[in-house]
Length: 366
Image (cartoon, rainbow, N blue to C red):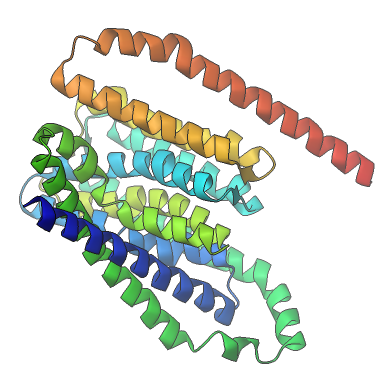
């Protein structure tokens, strides 16, 4: 049993890496061939594709009459994407953040998260709310493509004049789209087998099913984002790595939750517990991206490690709360009075220092 589980885990992990490689290679070549910045491909095509598991799970759960699962899936995936995926990607390879991310996309992710809170304050997400979210997705996608084409067109034209063979060297658009689709398919199989193997290994080793469900299974639908961003970072495609995470979070709320709300009967219920904890945490991790991204337009390894530490802290709270452990009150006191304030002060100091250094550099250069 354990041998079969380990084999399934290994095959799933190998497929994840292979699928991410195909997806990143196809996306970067498609961007270069069409004259679109890699960032916009990461924010749209790659982000939409890697969010397909969340969409599939939500549609299935809604059709089966349990739309509450859909809500938890979106909230958990967005928290996982920022704290774990972005954190691990930065630890593996420090990420350079494009100005568009700082100026437009991170603030938009925060705004979309606040929009979700506003729509959910009455305790449910109705069909009208879903229509609003889907309309926002259509506007965001069109705006992103238009802005990227406008900003990248001059540079692309210069590059093509200097090297007329550049388009041919990146392959045809249909072939690159085929690479993207193949990568998404392999990612889907890999993530499924990796989750099944992980659960089987954990159960075989005596880990409780509750803990397995709260950790491995909850993160399962976000494994494509994790694999894609890590591989993109290692290949030097930093815009795709960061854009995939930010774009996935925006798509999860506007697209995945929007579709779910439109087809749900009669609506998606938002429990008070989610409004008190899960939604604020999702908004908090979105806001946390802003000061980290501003510090030199770079996410350093220590900042990635900080995100990973907070994801472990989040998991610890979820497990303690689900089991009603006696250590929960003391743990919450430690986080509120020590860990969180120390982090906030550190980020503020680093942000102010980076702002002063940037201002000094601008003055000296002028």
